Image 1 (cartoon, one colour):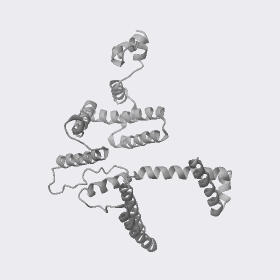
Image 2 (cartoon, helix red, strand yellow):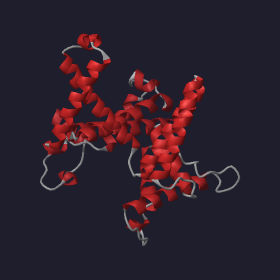
Image 3 (tube, rainbow, N blue to C red):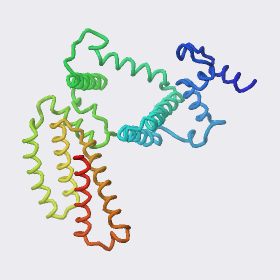
Image 4 (tube, helix red, strand yellow):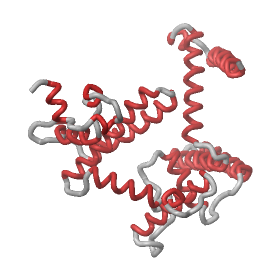
Length: 297
């Protein structure tokens, strides 16, 4: 059997399945989720699969899943559609990997995962799949979080002893996002500062406590107070409807751009090492000025 026939047999679909007028040459270049599931099964085959893939478990793969999600976000930030396509594929592979390991344990398979998310999306969008009315995107976001919290509470025994509004805030989230989630959940019952100005007052209070901790020299105390400062800042971001992680990414990018400009102006890393802080600060201010002028243009 030649390669063409083998491909036709393996991907035995009609051209109509991909759209009118597509020929077999176009079709055999297409692959669907079943092909990826098959690849994953072969990789995890204990007799003929990949030793590395076979050695993994949920805990060892989890860091890669998180890393791939960040790479998707990075591709979006750069506006690179080709990179985004590839990174979304990598993230999908992570989902398939976890589903395959669960199937091997007899827990669930990829089809169960798809069924669960389809059910959830239908259930949490009653304004699309039912008669409920939703005013706007913000109202839908609030309704989503309430539905999510109610489902988690019901799963864990309802509102009885030991149940908390914070139960559905995952511990594995990035801490900036987790801080915002914790605050949002507490705010549902009115436990919130309520306005950005009040948050700034709290920040000033925490700054005084930070100075006291720095005077004491106790690392644990400084860590506590620094954490409190960051927690208050995430609250300010939430009050202003700003994603704190996005704000930090912007600052990181700004710092990187300006520091690279300082390096370029200095001529070499060795030259930077020989400069005083005042000299480097002067180069920094030049880079900052050029950046602002570029934005104005």
